[in-house]
Image 1 (cartoon, rainbow, N blue to C red):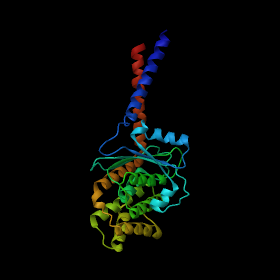
Image 2: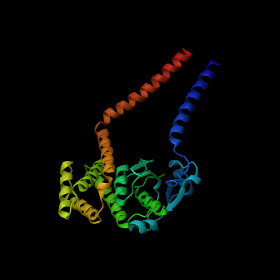
Image 3: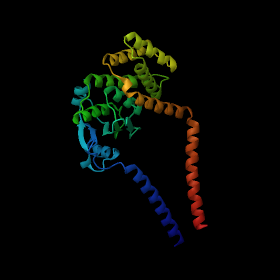
Image 4: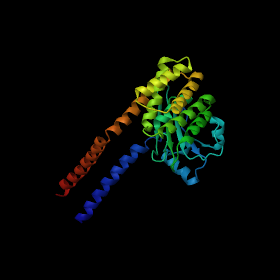
Length: 303
């Protein structure tokens, strides 16, 4: 009998913890925002029916009636960014419009399955494309680079009647390509690449370069400031990218606060990597404290 009571109490505690955790995670499935419209979910075309349902759950779609659902196809890649119409599309996204001034927030729900694109890379590219004041969640049930989610986001805005400039979308996609290519270089992390792109944009917003030579100077200055060494070809790739942005007259000054947010997030990640040993020590101590508290609780109950 005593053993049964112990087991029952343990099960109650476990289910209570699980319920509390689940409640905090699932609390986002509210009703439709009548002012800003329902969230939009865009699923990759290549997903099977079971994978699509998995993504639906990952993106916290509790009530399908409260969202608008679309499928992003290879034809959409060709339409929005002149991509390959035969591309496989797995990564999917949920876009929730936010109040003016809220900024842009990107969450990768399945970080282990989005292998090449970080939250900061998405955010940088979306700001280039003209996406602001939104919460964007990205997910994939299988390991993918993460590029198709960007096209899905463009399609979502198009579906809402907020068509983005195609030239800006193409440059944003090119930016994502440059970011992932540089992140594959030896000695460069995804975080360092995101920091570089963000700092270049901030400098462009501040200095408003009028010529390609001035863009070159900004790129060179930020490479030096961050201690990043690139080949001449990679330097030219960056210069060409930001020269295209200059020719499109993209005003990054309008999103300077969001660029600062991205820079802050990147720096936090870099600091976490640098202090990795101390971080994991804190994690271990945290869980030790939890287990000790539970052990002490049972000792006080059962002596």
